[in-house]
Length: 154
Image (cartoon, rainbow, N blue to C red; front, side, top):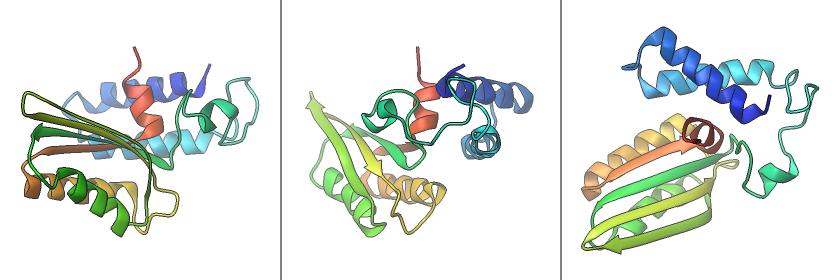
């Protein structure tokens, strides 16, 4: 079973036990703890494997725990990109990829950020993004890439 499938199954099991209204951060923390405990033993080939594979490095496959997917939605106005980017810069995170668009005055942006050198945890960054989103009048969502991929696969 691929690691993405394993993360997906663990996530479903946690939600099944805690209920659909479970706090997203609690679920993410539980899934992370469980996955980290079994990751050295379970791999795509059934044996131990390293955290990085060619697929992971290329941005495919199950994703990486040291990357965040940041999504921003709202009405367009100056300063949105700057505000979100400033949070990343202050935390010593790098933007790996960014895509933004405006359609009929509606703003949408997705950033893939490297948080391996971050001065704070992913949970703390998520809180900062929420606060910045409120200040800017937009919705900002952030999730680790590995969990994002597992929870959003078709």
